[in-house]
Image (cartoon, rainbow, N blue to C red; front, side, top):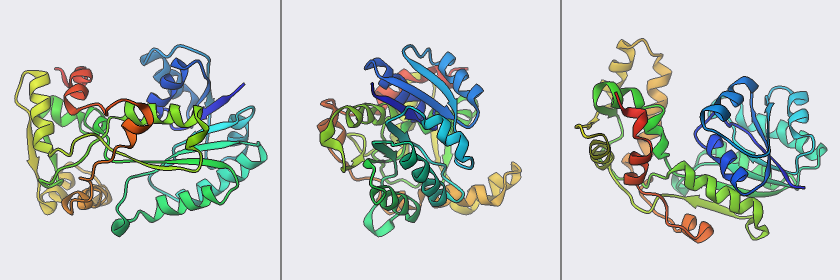
Length: 289
């Protein structure tokens, strides 16, 4: 019987991949560093099906080995900071010892002129490991608005970011989860790399408008200059590195590198990507007062 380990299930994507797999009747190990947090997510999101909550720590080979025991496929989510390439290398050694057959890795959309060295290096190491792989490269998540930016929307009726005025082909993470399910269940996707985007490239003003319609109150997008954003975060007591990381995150947006649209979601799943209107309607409880 196929058993799939899903890592990073307390994050935006992992927590959607697990129920999507369970709905297909697949057996899942749901993993994060803190197994108690896994159980909290499972309870809050009402998971139902054959799943086991397990601990998984990239810094602990025994933890990874225990999580991979009896597993033949892995949905791999890695941290965004730290020695990520080394973490992937350590994971691959354990995965080979545990006879893992297929890795679906959550990577990141990038333009060839603005390649993410970390994502590229990790993809190369997985491809060279001898384990079958599928790389998923999604664009910015819609779900960032109900997680990282929820407080500003809920309490200040605003999205204040140094994100410019350029459009982004935001993707709903539920579409990423749907693609992952197909990748795990159809052999034709082994060895493939997919760039996953929404069906439209929209500005943050359009996001704010969709939020306004869903919530019945005005939500504004505030396009903050980089220096102003630095000062706002500094006054809030946030480390300088946080501001710089967010500014760097949105630099490609201002270069129109997050605007391309692909057909991969619809080609793979048979369904058009979810729209910003669908997303804001489905998640509006996150911003209700």
